[in-house]
Amino acid sequence: MNDIRRESLRNAWRKRKDYIGADRKSSLYRSWRARVNTRKGREGGFPDSWITFQGFREEMKKDWEEGKILVRKNTKIPCSRDNCEWVDKGTENIGKLVKLEYNGKEQTLIEWANELSVNYNGIRQRYFKGKNYTAEQILYGKLFHKRREIRDHKGLEYQKRKDKISRMLSAYRLRDKKRGFVFDLPREYFENNIISQTCTYCGTTENVGCDRINNKQGHTMANVIPACYVCNAVRNNHFTVSEMKKIGKVIAQITIEREVA
Image (cartoon, rainbow, N blue to C red; front, side, top):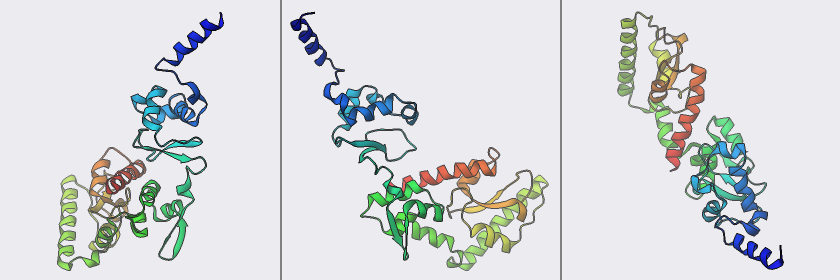
């Protein structure tokens, strides 16, 4: 093949829509390959526009710089232009390294998440949003004060709390009677160990009542744990307590994402 013919073929190749050229040696191209050509990348998911490098480049090159890597903001949903960001290599886990001070105590975000038994990704998202969040709101979300008031049942009007407890206990007693179950749930135990606690599954303090560990038995002290209305409805007869604890984490994450949005 003579030189003219060879150069002609090269020029024709450069004009193809799928021509990659010098980008093949860039971290932009490597990031694309990691998404579409690896099992981990495919399992994470990506939009149809990323099937070709040209589509990926068109959407993601704007904020890219050589050496940076692509990470998902929310690892529970697929990659997309809105859910991915370019970060310096080695800092992709910076959320586990930065520290936050609250009430005179300083810890990393992951340490706060473990101590408070809350979702780490929610804390991380609020931390990096930054300016509109106090340290307290970063840890608990912007509805923290509302939740604290709900948790402190002594702060509610006495008669309203008393009436609410009576209605709930009456409903449980009637339900057990109809099914032939034993009801043994003292008022004091219900007030101190159920409605004044957080949901066993998702951690909320809103609309907390009883969930029976064994649904074939009645409401007794040994057979009830605190659970919110949503988790109670989701569990029903479909999941065990241990399975529901896993599902509860997902429910908590969705709640956090709605608050952050």
